[in-house]
Length: 252
Length: 87
Image (cartoon, rainbow over all chains, first blue to last red; front, side, top):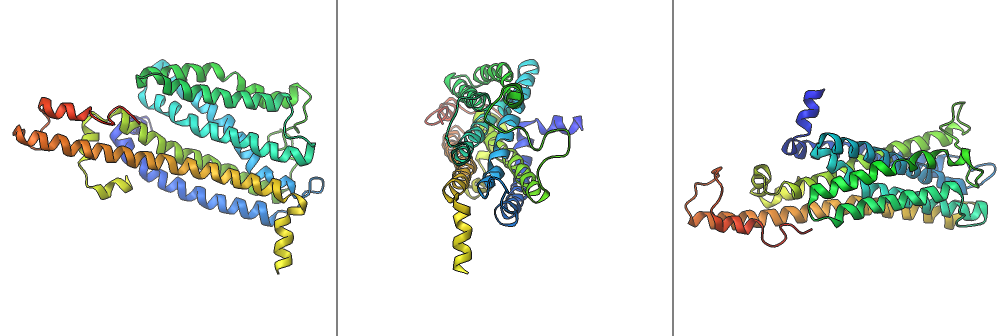
C-alpha cells in the first residue's frame, strides 16, 4: 500500500496512470448520473408537501455535500503539504479549489431557486446560507492566492495556509441548522435515526451524490495533470513526453 | 402522448425553478469537464513546439540525440521562450 502510494506520488508514473483512472471514474460517473437523473426526474413520485419542486434536491444536496467535502480534502492536503512538503499534496490543494468553488456556487444557486417557490424569497441572511456564502469566498481566496504569487511552490503554500485556517467554517456550515434557528430545513439523511426520506427518493439522491464525488475525482485528475506538466516542464520526463507525436497529445 | 409530456415538463407548476436548476448545474459541470482538457492540450502543444525548437538548435551543435547532457546554451534559451512560464 505505502509502496504503491510512494510510486503514485512520482510525477511521471502519476501522469500515465491518472489517464487510465480518470477514464474509469469518468464512465462510472456518467452511468450513475444517468441512473440518478432517471430516478430523480422520472421514477420518483412528487413530494406530498412540496410537489415537484423538491426535485431540485437531487442536484442541490450533492452539490452542498461536495462543497464541504472538497474544502475538507483541500485542508487535509494543505496540512500535509505544509508539514511534509509533498509536492503532490500542494497540487491537490490548488487543483481542487476551482471545482469546490463550482459546487459551492451550484449549492447556492439551486438553493436559491428552491427557496423562491418554497420560502417566498431568493435569499435570506440566515446562518446556513451566510456560512455557505463565506465558504464560496474562502474558495475564491484560495484561488486568488495561488494565482497572485509568481513562484508556484510559495503560492501553493500560501493557499494551503488559508485552507487550513478556513476549515473552521466547515463545522459552522454543517451545524448551523442546529445551532441557530434558520429558515433552512434540518438534515434529512445524515441524522442518526432512520433517514426521513422514502427509498424512491433516497436511491437517486445517493446515486447523484456518488456521481458528483466521482466527477470531482475525475476533474481533479485532469487539473492535476495540467499542473504537473507546467511545474515539471524542465524535467526529463516532460521533455521526453513532448517529443511524442502530435496524435498522442489528444489522448494523454 | 404530447399531453403527458407537456404535463411532465410543467413539473406541477415549478417548471422554471426545476429546469433552471438542472440547466445551470449541467452547464457548470460541463465547463469543469471541458476547460482542463483544453488547457492540457494547449500546454502539450507549447511543449511540443519548444521540443522541436530545441532539437533543431541542438542538431547544429552536434549534441548526440537523446543524450542526457544539458543542451547547448542556444536551446536552453528556447525552453524559456514564449509561453514557457505563462498560462
